Length: 169
Ligand SMILES: CC(C)(COP(=O)(O)OP(=O)(O)OC[C@H]1O[C@@H](n2cnc3c(N)ncnc32)[C@H](O)[C@@H]1OP(=O)(O)O)[C@@H](O)C(=O)NCCC(=O)NCCS
Image (cartoon, rainbow, N blue to C red; front, side):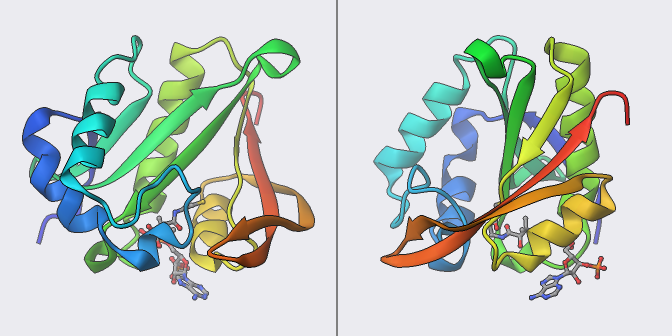
């Protein structure tokens, strides 16, 4: 099976794959509440329409053989944080633990530093999200800090971790 992921803009034809892979409580559990659960058709349509409005593109489908299996995005910050951008990502559960996100993170980092006027890219995994933390470390992100119990997800408190990579790294 080809496991070489390609990042490309979301398209209206991805809607069924987005719902199929995104409608999963185990994926949503490690995302912000912006990631809907259940993942309805209406939510999927709204999401794809919104991503198609960014110029330059910021949110991409992670695809294998041109089929969407997850998503990844980069979000430049503003005001005094304007030299920074946050990344976020997820994969359909059947594609976990195959090294896929470790191949996607360097692609979005390269895109971010070459597209936006930024010098730091950061990610904020949950303290319990070991897979995401390991993937970030493998991609050269440095652990910068842990904030105890700052987040509430599904009525539980979680630590917020910060990992970052600098343009100069
Ligand atoms: C986080 C996520 C994107 C990781 O993607 P992935 O393609 O499965 O990650 P990779 O296979 O590239 O790397 C994961 C690493 O963590 C390890 N790992 C996974 N689960 C683990 C666990 N429970 N404990 C310890 N290590 C774990 C894997 O073995 C792998 O390390 P290795 O290459 O040394 O074996 C995926 O699990 C996911 O979509 N989760 C739900 C949404 C999410 O968490 N998004 C990120 C928000 S910050």
